[in-house]
Image 1 (cartoon, rainbow, N blue to C red):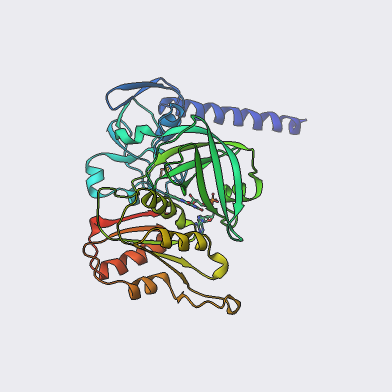
Image 2: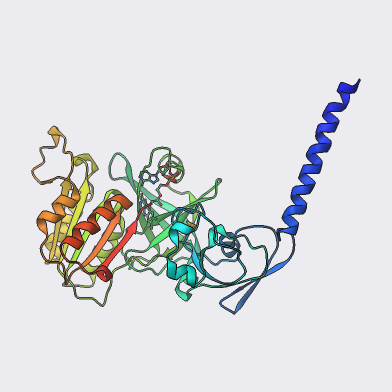
Length: 361
Ligand SMILES: Cc1cc2nc3c(=O)[nH]c(=O)nc-3n(C[C@H](O)[C@H](O)[C@H](O)COP(=O)(O)OP(=O)(O)OC[C@H]3O[C@@H](n4cnc5c(N)ncnc54)[C@H](O)[C@@H]3O)c2cc1C
Ligand code: FES
């Protein structure tokens, strides 16, 4: 008989725990009404216990968030002028001493538990949400696809060559950053070069589920990695894998504008099967008088019959590079590749302020 009461007692305990959790959330600010003030202008009423990043996004303010709030990209920085609590351990690796002094925080790590005031740079407020339709998917290699989207609503996006957009994976609502690979003159269609990451959530969706005609959501444009248009410096570009995407946008823009800057472009791959757009780059060399394309393979297969550059991209860059004290560098690819390339560029006396990069983390 007493055994019959055990499930009832357990349910009672669970209800009490749930009640205590709700009460704790309320007392910590999760249930009350608060106000978020942006740039001393826009006032947003807040209820619930979402993060600052998500609250901004719900109100159509799209702060860059390449990792989708996992505290691994460090892109979602805003200045907190009031509220926000203490800096969390997850924020520490991304904040410099100067940023901490200026109350810069990762918006994905802050819950709005009290009234808050934040400052967001005006250029960040330019990012919008776009409904887009897939109009072309093309395999560039065994693991890399070109995906072209037509912008439906709004129907155009202005962006700088080198910038990126964020793709929202429907259903699981995760967000990932992808550099725009097309020429900024095409404001109604955007191209992306997306490389499959084994077991990757977004890339599995793009490679295995996305088909022509699908409609999804993008936000953008984002990023401070873009062509320095007013500069006349010689350029050295280095990319690996899908890092070719933003460099392609930069080069096609420069060709269209008749820019005469000298450009040396190093592209690192493992074997011949990882190369793509070689023809396009060779054609560009003919049309764009000061442009040189140097693909390099780190482990060419015997059947590749490769007669081009062999070795790690850092060694190839080192061999082909002289004094860079007056040059500008554009780097794109994995964080490890970029860090190693910066060491080589430093050896050739590049100035820190002339190095621009996007780490595909
Ligand atoms: C500014 C910016 C621009 C970017 N532009 C591009 C682009 O143009 N094209 C492109 O393909 N990618 C680009 N990326 C990378 C992209 O945002 C995703 O990180 C990548 O596609 C993996 O996402 P996922 O959801 O499939 O993998 P996840 O589910 O996030 O990761 C699955 C696992 O794979 C590991 N992993 C994640 N990324 C990689 C990787 N690149 N190589 C090896 N292992 C990895 C993770 O640590 C994790 O263990 C860019 C990133 C940034 C920050
Ligand atoms: S969104 Fe990536 S660290 Fe905040």
